[in-house]
Image (spheres, helix red, strand yellow):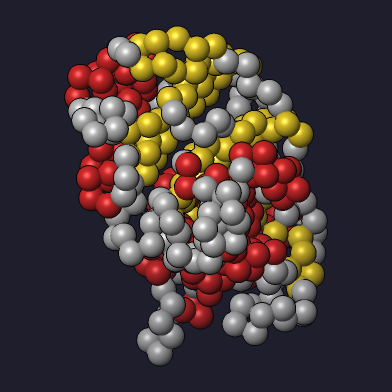
Length: 390
């Protein structure tokens, strides 16, 4: 089964704590994606260390085909039990999605995982068993491209307690909120950001507990090919563009000269859009058969700024909402971050004559650097990224 596992995770530290007592580990290998959420007892440095150990050990073992029994036994023998409370120093949830379309979930004392299919609640049927003295819930199921899983630490269901709500945000309330906020085209990162922002509001921006959200969205792969600049050898123009146009999925062209060359080889016109949605971003163009055509270096630089803003620890929903704007950089950032799963860059090394003026800080090396930095961020998001140079 050909599926793409889109993930997004983010945390709020407990008020006045520099370190988060929750830890998320996401490991991708050839067979599956393993997601572990560990919640260390208490908060601060000790909780952070214990949660990190738990997530690292379990994630690594599960990704290397160890059984849950072996992983839990290792944790039980590695981490101590709190003498005062007689409870484990770290709770955890493990979600493993296999390329075959099978899912496996293990939960130990964390809030139950939320599951939606087409935006509606979809029950996870689990069984209990004891491993090394720990009672775990274990589930096996099949997944489809319309499934959404949300794992949370108990800071989410305690949100607002003692502040805006007497008993905190209960599990059922969170489930209702997720259903209301659900949109089929929303990325895992955006779902995470929405839920965490709601928790922050309930805590009046002073979280009473470490609060973590992990979203796992099962998607059909969406391929994107993006041509940036013409080949250094003009004799290659036709073959490169023919190959580019023949690729499956969405297609984007960056660069005015590149757009003209692509349009000429496709036998169509370039229609410039003179609506300046953002005075700092050059206008886009329309090319029949191409999903988006933008200016080159300036637009790429603004696109990278959008991606950095969204991936920053201090990012807000405003950064993600800005991706819905109509200027070229916002549209390109949205296509790269939210709409595509596999991205292939075709990068031409031809020097633009307009950029050889020493007074202009634009150059071929800058274009290459921008593409490479954008690729780095996309890989961190779990995208499959490849680069082809001409």
